[in-house]
Amino acid sequence: MTTTMTKAEGARTHSSDEAARVAQALRREIISGRRRAGSVLSERQIGDAHGVGRAAVRPAVQNLIDEGLATPGGPRSAARVAECGYQDVTDLFVVAQQVSAYGCHLAAQRRSQDDLDHLAALLRRIDSALAKDRPKDVMRGCIEFRDESMRMSDNEALMDMDDVVRPRLEAYFEEIDRPFPSAVGFHAVYRAFVERDADAAYAIVFRLYQDAIDALTAHDAEGRSSADAIAVLSGALED
Image (tube, rainbow, N blue to C red; front, top):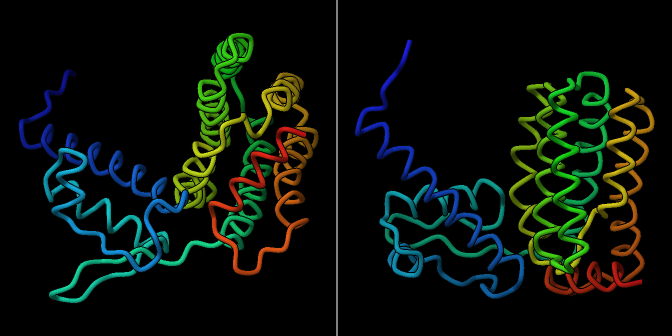
């Protein structure tokens, strides 16, 4: 049976897409330090900057509040940017490590041939971007590989946890100008999926995140910002 989307449903979908786009842009601004802790998240200014109405801005800001990146305002005051520090980045990577590694453990057991074909095509795209020295395209491919692996886990509770972690994690990845986790590491994960080696998939992904965590914890985090953490991660990827 063919279903037709009503105009109202189409408008809600469009507004939801806009809200997700604005929320991700604001995350990147906060994480990079372009929006300072304590600064006002003005609905009018955000809407003008991104060409959207308040119907998109309000849920975008609420997403940031739910994630702890913003603090709610009062009846007559706007939300403000929350403190986002070096330790917040380290903590996020520790949580993402556990979620992603276990997700890949399950994905190795539950993957289909269609899943493998899709990931193989994605790896070819990543390799092509690497050969052409397009690190941002490599990064986008790595993010998509991670997201597909989580989908393949087919575990509702785990994916609910990932829904909380993923937007912030991707915002950090997008600020790093080199691919992390490495494309080479994803080839190893893919081979583990092919062989249905769940333990190997877990260990490889755990190690990929551990490299970032080790780089972060090797530096004194006291008083440092999330932008400092991004610089440390980018520097570690150069080594």
